[in-house]
Image 1 (tube, rainbow, N blue to C red):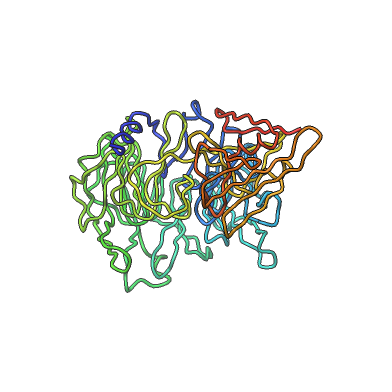
Image 2 (cartoon, rainbow, N blue to C red):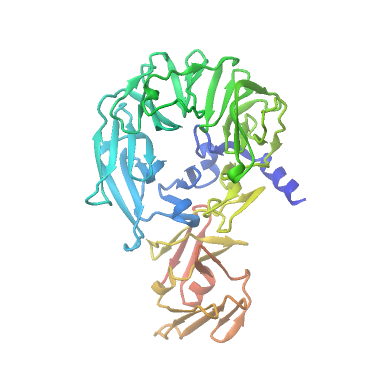
Length: 500
């Protein structure tokens, strides 16, 4: 019953915004919310603030990067573009008051794409078609050196794919429709003479102006050498109609034709761990149960499809051969692999399903699990004290409309002394008497689940809990107990606390 209800609610309220996709973002959903853009691990609010969660940052809910304002687009490698066209990079620094260092990249303006590699260097493309290489300095790992990439210009798109034993092959689509490639060293950038009039590249797949598709092989080849990429050509994919769009995850490939039908070719997958096997299917197959397709993409073990009507379907690719009549289930992720999907309802809220690891879901749950039931993500809620934005180690978590914040976040700024008894799991907040207010003692026992105000037990609306290694406390109850006024502006995603 719970599953059916969830699906019914979501399927009728989608706007056509789904991550990952060729163009992720909130689209017109900002009319009914405060999220302007989003991807799998970050979002931008309509006020230009930037929020992150999951991954190796380990935040379990959207958490604001303090000081990073006027953001309009995010990229790989912790890069963002501001509304003035400037490029910035952020990274964690626990020694600072905000928890982050912000670096403006003076050498580059108006970036449109970034390819980041292991946080050591990145390729950055600007609006003029120039490509820059950013490399971390050995003498100062907190800084990068940025310089134009020699041998290439007039670039429209960047991508890469992996080919053993060469490693990553970088692909450049120029504005004149030609395609160029290089290995990771970038010492030789060579044209792919067999390709003309290309309009889009993604991983090893190239879409041409006439709707035909070419691709480089990513299958293991024992005769493939370190230099073989220089002479390898992209072969035409036979058996496809003219396509409007293509997408690839480096293994499985999808295409949408003029009739909005979905085509599959590439690798399916069976088994797990050491028993995982990829099954190459070079002949494209028309997936007859996917109709009126707007966007489609492949996860590790499934396909997600967004239709023109705004509904999301998923189908498994756990087959030795992909069947043409593969079953597509409404908002189901029967084999999602190690990834997750995010969609946005027309009320502006984000919903997530798939595999949760490192807090990727943004729901506040840091346990690893898989679900095919879409769950609501926590909203990005900013906390201000007397007009000043307060940095949080992990963001606000709401339960039954009650806001909670980490133990050591704001209450010390309200004059409270905080102590933590780790053995008995008891948090104590004490504030001495002032001319206006009497002394206050709040004791929260996480083991027993009890709360006491000045020695008298208080029944809270929700149970106490922890997330991302932090004990969470009810924001309004404690703030008002300490004499502050709390104003929760839910339409803006902001809680304002005033303390005189």
